[in-house]
Image 1 (tube, rainbow over the protein chains, first blue to last red):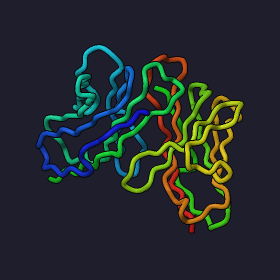
Image 2 (image 1 turned 90 degrees about the vertical axis):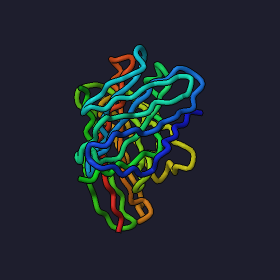
Image 3 (image 1 turned 30 degrees about the horizontal axis):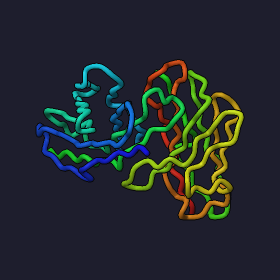
Length: 115
Length: 117
Protein backbone atom coordinates (compact mmCIF):
# COMPACT_ATOMS: atom_id res chain seq x y z
CA UNK A 1 0.00 0.00 0.00
CA UNK A 2 1.09 3.52 -0.69
CA UNK A 3 2.03 5.80 2.17
CA UNK A 4 3.51 9.25 2.54
CA UNK A 5 5.54 10.52 5.45
CA UNK A 6 6.12 14.19 6.18
CA UNK A 7 8.75 14.62 8.83
CA UNK A 8 7.89 18.04 10.16
CA UNK A 9 4.57 18.72 11.83
CA UNK A 10 5.11 22.43 12.38
CA UNK A 11 7.88 24.64 11.07
CA UNK A 12 8.38 28.23 12.19
CA UNK A 13 10.65 30.47 10.15
CA UNK A 14 11.50 34.11 9.93
CA UNK A 15 10.92 35.95 6.68
CA UNK A 16 13.74 35.46 4.16
CA UNK A 17 14.82 32.19 5.75
CA UNK A 18 15.23 29.16 3.52
CA UNK A 19 12.72 26.35 3.65
CA UNK A 20 12.95 22.63 3.17
CA UNK A 21 10.07 20.32 3.98
CA UNK A 22 10.71 16.61 3.94
CA UNK A 23 8.55 14.05 2.19
CA UNK A 24 9.19 10.33 1.82
CA UNK A 25 6.89 7.87 0.17
CA UNK A 26 6.40 4.16 0.06
CA UNK A 27 5.25 2.62 -3.18
CA UNK A 28 6.32 -0.36 -5.19
CA UNK A 29 6.11 1.11 -8.67
CA UNK A 30 6.58 4.30 -10.62
CA UNK A 31 4.89 7.25 -9.00
CA UNK A 32 3.48 10.67 -9.60
CA UNK A 33 4.35 13.10 -6.82
CA UNK A 34 2.66 16.30 -5.77
CA UNK A 35 2.88 19.12 -3.31
CA UNK A 36 -0.31 20.93 -2.42
CA UNK A 37 -0.72 24.04 -0.30
CA UNK A 38 -3.72 25.02 1.79
CA UNK A 39 -3.82 28.64 2.87
CA UNK A 40 -5.94 29.45 5.93
CA UNK A 41 -9.60 29.16 5.05
CA UNK A 42 -8.93 28.16 1.46
CA UNK A 43 -8.98 24.97 -0.58
CA UNK A 44 -6.05 22.90 -1.67
CA UNK A 45 -3.96 24.31 -4.47
CA UNK A 46 -1.30 22.55 -6.48
CA UNK A 47 2.21 23.89 -5.91
CA UNK A 48 4.05 21.53 -8.20
CA UNK A 49 4.05 18.02 -9.55
CA UNK A 50 6.46 15.42 -10.82
CA UNK A 51 5.51 12.85 -13.43
CA UNK A 52 8.75 12.16 -15.29
CA UNK A 53 11.86 13.82 -16.68
CA UNK A 54 13.97 16.33 -14.80
CA UNK A 55 13.81 15.36 -11.13
CA UNK A 56 14.11 19.00 -10.09
CA UNK A 57 10.66 20.45 -10.47
CA UNK A 58 9.84 24.13 -10.29
CA UNK A 59 6.41 25.21 -9.15
CA UNK A 60 4.52 28.37 -8.45
CA UNK A 61 5.53 31.12 -6.04
CA UNK A 62 9.21 30.23 -6.12
CA UNK A 63 8.83 26.70 -4.77
CA UNK A 64 10.75 23.73 -6.11
CA UNK A 65 11.05 20.07 -5.23
CA UNK A 66 13.57 17.39 -6.01
CA UNK A 67 12.66 13.79 -6.67
CA UNK A 68 15.37 11.45 -5.45
CA UNK A 69 14.32 7.98 -6.47
CA UNK A 70 16.96 6.17 -4.45
CA UNK A 71 15.76 7.86 -1.29
CA UNK A 72 12.05 7.71 -2.11
CA UNK A 73 11.98 11.40 -1.33
CA UNK A 74 10.37 14.51 -2.79
CA UNK A 75 11.41 17.39 -0.57
CA UNK A 76 9.97 20.85 -1.04
CA UNK A 77 12.24 23.88 -1.00
CA UNK A 78 12.11 27.64 -1.22
CA UNK A 79 15.21 29.81 -0.86
CA UNK A 80 13.51 32.73 0.86
CA UNK A 81 10.09 32.48 2.48
CA UNK A 82 7.60 35.28 2.86
CA UNK A 83 4.92 35.90 5.44
CA UNK A 84 2.33 35.01 2.81
CA UNK A 85 3.75 31.47 2.63
CA UNK A 86 2.15 30.73 5.98
CA UNK A 87 -0.02 27.71 5.20
CA UNK A 88 -0.36 23.95 5.46
CA UNK A 89 1.68 21.94 2.96
CA UNK A 90 0.76 18.44 1.88
CA UNK A 91 2.85 15.95 -0.03
CA UNK A 92 0.88 13.38 -2.05
CA UNK A 93 1.61 10.36 -4.20
CA UNK A 94 -0.21 8.38 -6.85
CA UNK A 95 0.81 5.41 -8.93
CA UNK A 96 1.70 6.16 -12.54
CA UNK A 97 -1.25 6.16 -14.93
CA UNK A 98 -3.61 5.74 -12.01
CA UNK A 99 -6.20 8.13 -13.30
CA UNK A 100 -9.01 6.65 -11.28
CA UNK A 101 -7.26 6.11 -8.00
CA UNK A 102 -7.09 8.69 -5.26
CA UNK A 103 -4.06 10.54 -4.07
CA UNK A 104 -2.50 9.43 -0.83
CA UNK A 105 -1.55 12.35 1.36
CA UNK A 106 1.00 12.91 4.05
CA UNK A 107 -0.13 14.35 7.35
CA UNK A 108 0.86 17.82 6.33
CA UNK A 109 3.35 20.37 7.60
CA UNK A 110 2.19 23.65 9.03
CA UNK A 111 4.49 26.50 8.07
CA UNK A 112 4.37 29.68 10.10
CA UNK A 113 6.43 32.58 8.80
CA UNK A 114 7.01 35.40 11.21
CA UNK A 115 7.95 38.91 10.22
CA UNK B 1 -7.38 24.39 -15.80
CA UNK B 2 -10.07 22.03 -14.73
CA UNK B 3 -12.22 23.23 -11.87
CA UNK B 4 -14.11 21.38 -9.20
CA UNK B 5 -16.79 23.27 -7.33
CA UNK B 6 -18.21 22.26 -3.98
CA UNK B 7 -21.33 23.56 -2.28
CA UNK B 8 -22.03 24.69 0.35
CA UNK B 9 -18.79 26.09 1.74
CA UNK B 10 -20.05 25.77 5.25
CA UNK B 11 -23.14 24.46 6.97
CA UNK B 12 -24.39 24.29 10.52
CA UNK B 13 -27.06 21.74 11.30
CA UNK B 14 -28.81 20.31 14.30
CA UNK B 15 -27.95 16.89 15.60
CA UNK B 16 -30.10 14.24 13.97
CA UNK B 17 -30.66 16.05 10.70
CA UNK B 18 -29.13 15.22 7.31
CA UNK B 19 -26.89 17.40 5.21
CA UNK B 20 -26.16 17.14 1.50
CA UNK B 21 -22.90 18.35 -0.02
CA UNK B 22 -22.52 18.73 -3.77
CA UNK B 23 -19.40 18.36 -5.84
CA UNK B 24 -19.38 19.43 -9.49
CA UNK B 25 -16.79 19.23 -12.19
CA UNK B 26 -17.24 22.43 -14.14
CA UNK B 27 -15.42 21.89 -17.43
CA UNK B 28 -14.87 18.18 -17.66
CA UNK B 29 -16.76 14.97 -17.09
CA UNK B 30 -15.62 12.97 -14.12
CA UNK B 31 -16.52 9.30 -14.03
CA UNK B 32 -14.77 9.10 -10.70
CA UNK B 33 -14.72 11.54 -7.82
CA UNK B 34 -13.18 11.18 -4.41
CA UNK B 35 -14.47 12.30 -1.05
CA UNK B 36 -12.06 13.17 1.73
CA UNK B 37 -12.47 14.22 5.32
CA UNK B 38 -10.05 16.48 7.09
CA UNK B 39 -9.95 16.84 10.85
CA UNK B 40 -8.37 19.95 12.37
CA UNK B 41 -4.61 19.98 11.95
CA UNK B 42 -4.65 16.60 10.26
CA UNK B 43 -4.30 15.29 6.76
CA UNK B 44 -6.95 14.40 4.24
CA UNK B 45 -8.36 10.95 4.83
CA UNK B 46 -10.06 9.27 1.91
CA UNK B 47 -13.63 8.34 2.74
CA UNK B 48 -14.90 6.89 -0.51
CA UNK B 49 -14.57 6.76 -4.25
CA UNK B 50 -17.66 7.87 -6.09
CA UNK B 51 -18.30 6.10 -9.40
CA UNK B 52 -20.75 7.44 -11.95
CA UNK B 53 -23.61 5.03 -12.49
CA UNK B 54 -22.54 2.53 -9.85
CA UNK B 55 -22.09 2.17 -6.13
CA UNK B 56 -19.44 4.08 -4.29
CA UNK B 57 -16.44 2.29 -2.86
CA UNK B 58 -15.95 3.07 0.81
CA UNK B 59 -12.75 2.97 2.77
CA UNK B 60 -12.48 0.72 5.76
CA UNK B 61 -14.16 2.19 8.80
CA UNK B 62 -16.42 4.56 6.87
CA UNK B 63 -20.11 3.86 7.42
CA UNK B 64 -21.79 3.66 4.03
CA UNK B 65 -25.24 4.07 5.56
CA UNK B 66 -24.21 7.26 7.27
CA UNK B 67 -22.30 8.82 4.40
CA UNK B 68 -24.46 8.31 1.35
CA UNK B 69 -22.80 9.00 -1.97
CA UNK B 70 -24.66 9.46 -5.22
CA UNK B 71 -22.88 10.02 -8.53
CA UNK B 72 -25.89 10.40 -10.76
CA UNK B 73 -24.24 12.29 -13.60
CA UNK B 74 -20.78 12.77 -15.06
CA UNK B 75 -20.46 16.19 -13.48
CA UNK B 76 -22.10 15.78 -10.10
CA UNK B 77 -21.45 13.71 -7.01
CA UNK B 78 -23.25 14.27 -3.73
CA UNK B 79 -22.35 13.27 -0.20
CA UNK B 80 -25.19 13.13 2.30
CA UNK B 81 -24.35 12.94 5.97
CA UNK B 82 -27.37 11.27 7.47
CA UNK B 83 -28.50 11.72 11.06
CA UNK B 84 -25.53 13.93 11.73
CA UNK B 85 -23.97 14.08 15.17
CA UNK B 86 -21.38 16.45 16.63
CA UNK B 87 -18.60 13.94 15.97
CA UNK B 88 -19.38 14.28 12.24
CA UNK B 89 -18.29 17.89 12.38
CA UNK B 90 -15.38 18.15 10.02
CA UNK B 91 -14.10 19.55 6.76
CA UNK B 92 -15.25 17.52 3.75
CA UNK B 93 -13.44 17.85 0.44
CA UNK B 94 -14.13 16.35 -2.96
CA UNK B 95 -11.66 15.79 -5.74
CA UNK B 96 -11.61 14.71 -9.35
CA UNK B 97 -9.24 14.32 -12.28
CA UNK B 98 -9.80 15.30 -15.86
CA UNK B 99 -9.95 11.96 -17.72
CA UNK B 100 -8.99 13.65 -20.99
CA UNK B 101 -5.48 14.08 -19.66
CA UNK B 102 -3.54 10.90 -19.07
CA UNK B 103 -1.35 12.14 -16.27
CA UNK B 104 -2.69 15.06 -14.37
CA UNK B 105 -3.08 16.34 -10.90
CA UNK B 106 -6.28 16.02 -8.92
CA UNK B 107 -8.46 19.12 -8.64
CA UNK B 108 -10.09 19.87 -5.36
CA UNK B 109 -13.29 21.54 -4.37
CA UNK B 110 -13.27 24.41 -1.92
CA UNK B 111 -14.33 22.10 0.87
CA UNK B 112 -17.38 22.13 3.11
CA UNK B 113 -17.05 22.84 6.78
CA UNK B 114 -19.80 20.97 8.60
CA UNK B 115 -20.66 21.88 12.17
CA UNK B 116 -23.25 19.77 13.94
CA UNK B 117 -24.71 21.32 17.08
